[in-house]
Length: 381
Image 1 (spheres, rainbow, N blue to C red):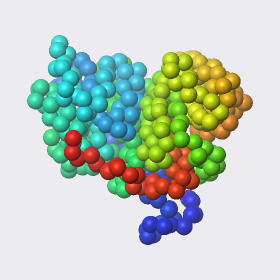
Image 2 (image 1 turned 180 degrees about the vertical axis):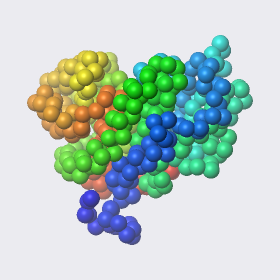
Image 3 (image 1 turned 135 degrees about the vertical axis):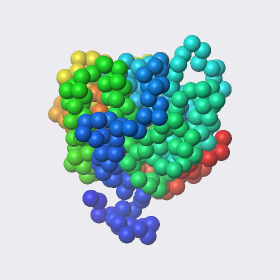
């Protein structure tokens, strides 16, 4: 645990609620799993109110905003890859203005930290008006979105007092991973034995995060000291890691007021390359699951882009898998995360990026818990 003196009058050792909540993530993820997994049964009884729709629906539409939408982007790939269910991710603020879903029998999933996000409530109400069954994922029970949903899944994050989402984000992604496994079993895409093997990997995550937090925190402070003067950042990720590039960029943007954008790795040549110079930190998600050929292929392509960034004197901050010497030979700074299956790596790799954003903002002298112009719950459209 960190030992910096607190400055906010709290009784713990954290100077900011954001940093404390980053450190609470192992427990929050463990509680989320325990809440929704009983004797290898995922969501026991929790989705029973919409059980009929779960047997017949053709598409899952996820409507969310901000960090919750980025969780949805990760969930899209998890659910499609494991269960074969088609997923679309919408901005909650745009869903009401989209055409109705002709010839499609969807379920709409809404994701919100507070349960009171105005755009997301409006999206759910529009779905209900169209006769569509809904599932709400919320960090807070007994809220508008939960009361009005067909079924609700509550994270185990507990209260999150800092405006930037940290533990609410990783617990949302945890529920979406469980949803991918649930649908894979429901649709006969996965045997009970295979499902148990996936769940074993998930159950190991909290301990793996706990063991690495202080190391990531120290590196984030070191890397933040190098890069805090920068006014723009580029974040790159491929496949499921693109969602984490988006989320990492949003965290930095929210609290450091530097301009940051998340892009798919392969899109660098389609415009953003013009930004790359010796002043631009390029943050790259370069993890891989060595047992997954598709993951290895994506990783190899990512290494090629990193070499190109290096040739243009861009400053590389990367997240890589333990034992990876190739990334270390190319990048300026590297966060190493434990080996994990491809679709669980996002939960691991986002945490160093949360800490990096935190330390960049602190070095700039900003109030990370209360960024200007932002509120914890956007309750007006």
